[in-house]
Length: 376
Ligand code: SF4
Image (cartoon, rainbow, N blue to C red; front, side, top):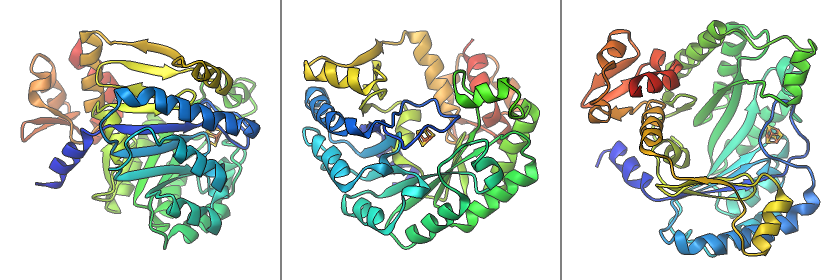
């Protein structure tokens, strides 16, 4: 069986996501759910155990991947991380092939690295964001500096982890040469996987307020952001990385098994406050509050913020939208009813190859819009 066949076979087993909603402090651009009240940790671990017990009967198949995200899972002590893993005991984790843990560079030290290896973590996703202090501190307000990232990378180099580095581009006044330098410096640290996200100023964040008040320059206009997006593809492809999803690049064989499940619409269970789940038909999300989430679970009630069964039109849009985020694209028959496929092939946004329609670099840039226009 070829490697893509293996990926698809693996992708059918469900994934498990655990949201760790604790951070030392809030980064100004962040709109994830996270709190700094670490005293809630025991309540959180009890809540996870209750949620795992409640979910287990509906999720009998072995999970193939576990993704411990946040928040900042790397701030968990030995007691916190082992408590979290013990809370998952009602679920079948006997066939896990990938365990990812998100880590902040400032939390990486020999003891933490030993703990993660001992507890079975196979993949570390490091929140590098930038190796340039001009943006890392003032704009992104991160708790670490570039030297801490270099030290973390040096320490992890000989450990048994697959390494992902998260990077942010599209920063105020960031020129292509700046972004190219960040990518080149990142490649020197020899990661296996790189995720690149365009900075957004989500309403209500401190970053958005600073920009509205004129304290920070605005985000680059769309044409400049597009230039940076295409530059990522060029620099990383030249270093042997493939853009296998709009924002994600990997050396061959190092794609994130867990994240592929999201894009391939494979079921996944999300535990913890603000976690999302999909069982192949229904989608739901938990409430974004440790206290309300834990209190519902202590009464045996699912801590839902919403639950829905998408209608056929929504499912079709979602299938095409997710499919066009991936380099593997969609089977041609999935777009058999779409009248504009040839137009998008002629315009260089799609290619037709071996019975599949795949986005080009230019297509990745506007993947969501293509999906909407192809399903109208
Ligand atoms: S460390 Fe991550 S999750 Fe925590 S506040 Fe910063 S961006 Fe948000």
